[in-house]
Length: 103
Image (cartoon, rainbow, N blue to C red; front, side):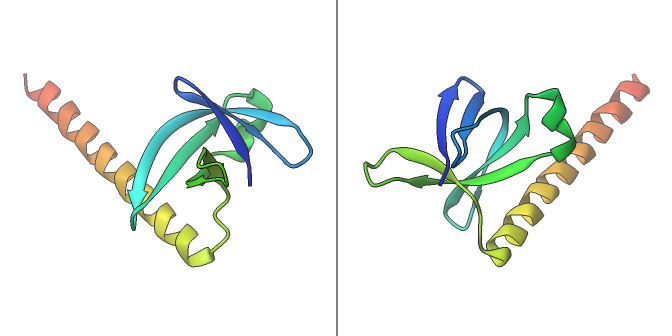
C-alpha cells in the first residue's frame, strides 16, 4: 500500500522506503464500482515514467489511500477505459477546432 496526501490537485505518494514523490491528479475515473486516480509526476526527472494509475481504497482506519493495481485483468480494464476517455476528448477537441474553422 502507498500512503497519500491531497493538496488540491496534487498527491504525495510515499513508497515502502519512505521516499516521497509528488504527482498531479490528472483525472479520477470509475470502473466497475471502483475509483482510480490518473497521476502524472511533477518531478521533471520522473516525467519519463509517464502516467501512473492507482486504485482508491480504505485502510484499517477507514482512511482513503491509493494502492497499486496488482491484478492484470483489472489493470487492462482500467487502462482501456482511460484510453477511451482520451480518444473521446481528442474527438471533442477536433470537433471544436472544426467549428472554429467554419466561423
